[in-house]
Image 1 (cartoon, rainbow, N blue to C red):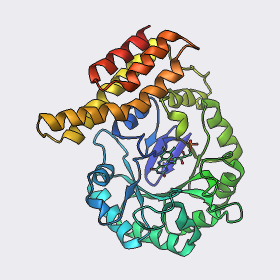
Image 2 (tube, helix red, strand yellow):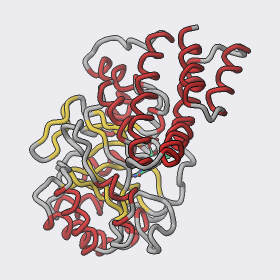
Image 3 (cartoon, rainbow, N blue to C red):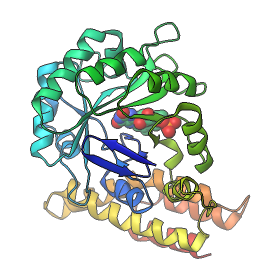
Image 4 (cartoon, helix red, strand yellow):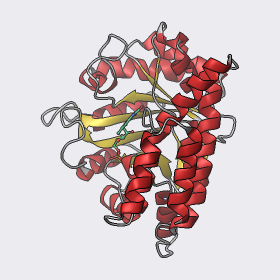
Length: 341
Ligand SMILES: Cc1cc2nc3c(=O)[nH]c(=O)nc-3n(C[C@H](O)[C@H](O)[C@H](O)COP(=O)(O)O)c2cc1C
């Protein structure tokens, strides 16, 4: 399967979903190494004030290691979105994605994300402004609509196509559903039928086989995986095998997984200490180390839960240590012991 986005061909059509607080630069690198064809950076606010924040600047700056960096922008003001898109382009992005899917009521003091789906004319103006501001392909990610009686993803997708956008991603839930219930593949299929630009299907892909099922149900050109990649970058290579008609290689053995986990840990610490400490004094460095360790805990918990032996006291003890300690050395040693045993 090849997903075409403007001039780019995304091999495998498998996309790592943007997940704020999870899919940072180090984890996106891990997932690409494991077979994700495209990874989308966490949403960045287009709001002029927030644009100055370290977090927004970090999310808008392309990762030099990424051959096809996608920057995702969130906002309700067409001019600010256009300016933010230009900044993303100057920062090295190769694709700009517009977020019409975030369910939070207010971001940057304004209704944006999925709230824009309630205002189709504003949605169109945002897409047009961003499209005209950059020479890059522009894509949009949305939900199926605001609620059960307002499902207008196909209309917004048609507007996206008319405005020259290169692809759309649809998460098969309404804004009202947030993350409850099941993602609705039939609604995604409706969008696929409504447009001739590529549609990426998203929602509830937890196992490699779910990728094939979602393609079959929707006819989508690509599949985006979010929570199914929690502590599970291997889902990409497994899904790739299935897409190629090969058998699922399964999860790696615990010791093999361990080398990926340790590499992720080291890269995560290296990246976040540099980001948080910013060449400051020893005290700042120590704060950076602690921030890096704490932000890795969720990944550690997901990895260890996935590989833990049922009711194994040794595994449980190591997991407790790794997710509680404030010592980088102790956390690393705990991970090493867990995956080597
Ligand atoms: C923790 C978390 C953070 C998310 N952050 C973003 C984001 O920054 N931008 C976005 O478009 N969607 C975001 N999403 C939504 C996901 O990209 C995806 O659409 C959703 O999780 C459904 O896919 P899944 O069932 O494969 O997880 C986030 C989801 C989660 C769970």
